[in-house]
Length: 490
Ligand SMILES: [Zn+2]
Figure 1 (cartoon, rainbow, N blue to C red):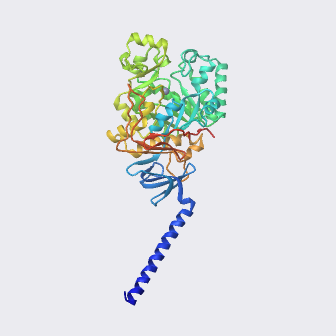
Figure 2: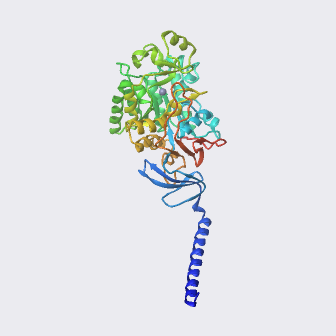
């Protein structure tokens, strides 16, 4: 090597050393900056946020249970998952989940749900209800104070979940109504998320009694979550009149109104009910609604729903009823027999086109109305969310993916923000929001549960985080974690 070449060689060597040193310094700098290392990083997913309308490939950094960064830049985390080809969505929020134990929370988590709330039937004792779940829940939980359980207690009904005696069939005295108001007020003071109603189940509750309960709700600016008084189209006791009752109650008292499972009440009248709700909204009434993506209902056979006249009201007959415990279809004989013992019965009553119309409507949120008990129940308890994404979005193309996610995340969060400001940090993929996230494969996500086998986990939900903690990871439930927190009123 001559001298000139030697000098050139030295210069190249020096340059290389400088570049190497610079690279080292950058690397050291990255490690030294704590904000660059997150607890969890989700890389390269299609992030969809219905509020900001973000729909793009991003990395997400999570620390201390909160979304800290959403960026196209590289990130490092103590735990990193790759989400290439997957959708990263806000965790699903189910406003109507009767199953409130670990068995159900597992089904919910595998279906992408990070918050499951019992707002229709609710509880009769909010403090006790929340205390029973504290620190022991896989996902977030919450309940309303319920007119049904309060009426069961005040009227000394033998029913546990739904009334079958005086709670359903006896008119309340003025003093009994006063006692119900007192217990509902107490529940709201304890942080219950609204007032639940099942007027169809408490059939003897007068219109005045219902108005009195709405007045208590209005005092707390608390929404009323209502299963309406009548179902179906048959005049004069039909779902249109039932919706008029609660729209009026909301208008008269000022309490916000949420009508539960619109399609199982409306049946063939569902498009009319949706039109009524849209019209009431356009005049400024605070009214919302929800539906589940199935063609059958489920309730208890001994409840007032199956009092005389149910065939005409629901437009179905014995053969359309399916006994939950055995899966058998009923006859007049077995119906009479089971009505004495009591238990869950599925009613195949909702036409397919009505299920599709209600899932696709921009007015409805998705809510399951589900509950699995020892592996028995309605498939909605385990498959509602994956079914909307797999069947109604991907297969039927009844609505877009972004619209479906809005109905599962942002809309239910917004419904509750007035009574529970903590919901402003849920239902969004936003810096500063709670890291409740659902990561799923849009090409495979689907429900697997059926009316015959309801206890089957949905497929295609890959990761689910609750407060930054994995409850589902690589499509498997995680054991030994209970990050679920109480959702309560302000
Ligand atoms: Zn209901």
